[in-house]
Length: 339
Image 1: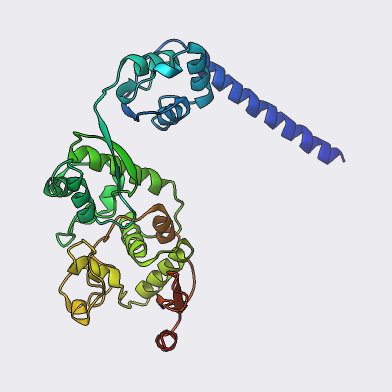
Image 2: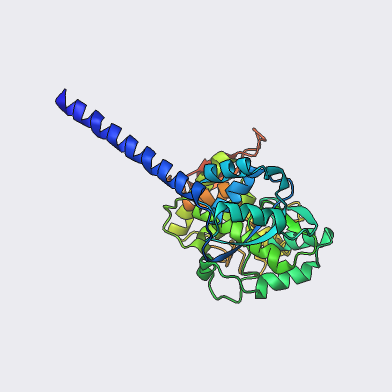
């Protein structure tokens, strides 16, 4: 009983200390009214954002530490309804009062548009969508994606291979973005890269592969699977085939090569399997030379944590007709389940 009592006392002390630390940090930030110099940070506050969303944006950018302190200070200031949307140049030494004042008086009120990039879109498809929206031409976007300079460590994993069609293929995260109507290709690409890095770094990986290899596998999964519950299993098939030096024989990579990244084909012909392309995983061993589309978070998670099993084959389950697949360990089983 004495041991239990000591444990309970220790737990109580830890709770009190943690609560004290929380209160101390809260009061420190809440009561601070003096700004110091700090690193400049550019933040975008979308139109219609409330205090809670703005607090999230500020914390994600390292401008505040305690969201409750910001929200309480904002509420007590009576300025919650005066905060503006737009682009703001803030710095990490600013106190909450000065941040609030900057959000009231500053900001760039340029008109914005929302762009939605679905999971599985290739960079070619993204370029076409942005051109159709009137932002800029598809070629301007593709040129910037290929030649623009972007400072993200993860891009260092991309090999210097001239056979890669677009070096940023797969690294532009599919999502909905609010961008300025006169945004440049560089600004849009940088926003999508930043979102990719945030999502990628939020996933714990156990695959042992490089980021580039993981993104390449994730892109294959994204075009092959319609079901979240099968993505990791398909990743496992890919890893098993790579381990055994078997050709991947994934149709999605063929379609990417033959359709010039547009995915506007209904089916793959036998003649397509003979196309000379570094993306042809029927003729070439290993992974395609690079990603074939922008994978979503579920496909990234699957590629970074493939399921361990012995399956080497899969095909669509035509009986169920629900997007699911039948997985088999041998070619004979594969053929039998197709009958």
